[in-house]
Length: 459
Image 1 (cartoon, one colour):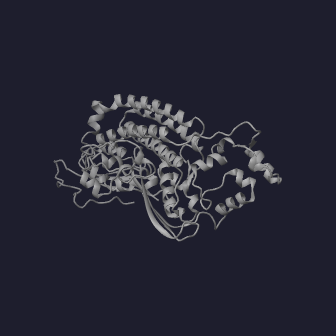
Image 2: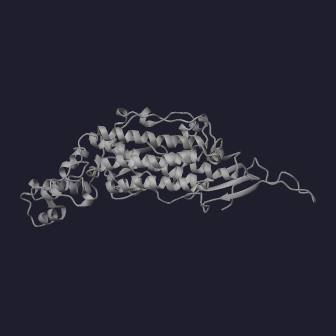
Image 3: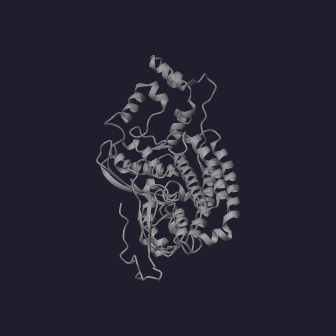
C-alpha cells in the first residue's frame, strides 16, 4: 500500500547542496503493528523532526459486516453482534438495540427492567472509562495506575459475569426485557463493589491528577475546540471535555434517567487532561446513579421457594418429555444456575407482557401446549418477532458518546435495514486535527484519550 501524500508539505524544503544540511519532512507509518495502535488503525505521519506537520488516519477493516449480519438474522438474534461493537461496554449496546426494536413494536419494558437497564448501562460506562484511562496511562509509561484500574474493573466484571454468564460477550438484554432477573443479593454485592472501585480510583487520582509528568504529557496536548468538535459530530466525554454539556441522559431522557439526579461534568479547553478529568468524574456520577437506582428499583429478586418439593429444570424437561404435565404448572421450579432469574415469577417482573415478542418462561414452555407453541412461534425460521412496517432512529448515551441505531422494518421477521451510528467513527475523523502541531510522542496519548474501539468503526 502506497503512503498518502500531503500536497501542502514539500518533501524536501531545502535544495541539497554539498557541504550543507538538508531539511526534509519525513513520512512515518505508525500502526497497525505498533503496540499502541489498537485494532487496525494506521496513521501516516508527516514529521518535521519530532513535530507532527500532518497526518492521514486509516481506520482499516475488521470484516465483521455488523450491519449486514443484523439483516440476515431475526430481530432478536442480533444481540451477540451488538456485544462486539464495543466489547468493553457491551451492555449499553444491548440496551440501545433493544430500545430500537421496542420502539418499532411500540412496547415498553417493565419498570423493574428499566431500572436494571440503567444499572447495567452505568456499570458498563465505569468499566469502559476504567479501561480507557488504564490503557492510556500505561501507554505513557505509568504501569501502576493500570494495575489499580484493572483491579477495579475486575470487581465489576465479576458481577457482570454472575448476572449474564459472560464477561464481554454478554447478550443479556432481550427485546421486551432482559434475559433474567437479578440474582439474589446481587444488588448488595454491587453496592460493596462500588466502594472497592472508589478506593482504587482514589489511588489513581493521587497518582495521576497532580502528577507533574502526567500533566506535562496531557495538558494543552491533543486540543480540539468546542466548535470544531461539534461540527465533526463529536459526542460523549471528548465533546464534553471542550465545555459543551451534551448528554442524552439529560437532554433526551430515556429509561428512568429523568427520575435520577446526576451532574454532567465538562472540561474547559478540550485537551487530553480535560478528557481524563471528565472520565474520572463521570465514573463518580455513574456510581451515584447506580446507588439511586438500587434504592428506587421496584420489587426484589425472586428466589424459588425451596419448600414444596421443587423440580429442577432437568427434572421438569424429563417430565414433559414423558407426558407427565398434569401438575407441572402447579409445581415450583428451581432453575439451573445459568437460568436463575428466568422462572415464571421472575420473568414477568423484568419482561413486557407481550407474547409476540417475549419468550414464555420455561414452566410454560414445558408445562402446557400454549406455552410450547408460543416458544416455537418466536424461535422458528420465518416466524419470530415481527415489527410493523416502519422506520425509527434511537440513541442512548454510550460510554464514548451517542450510540444510535436506524432501523427499517418491512413487517417480516428480519430487519430490512439496520444502520449504526457509533461514537468512535466521528471521533476518529477529527484525530488528524487533534495531533497536528504536537510531538510524535503525544500521538499515543491523544489516541488513548479518544478511546477508539475498532468494532465500532468497521460495521
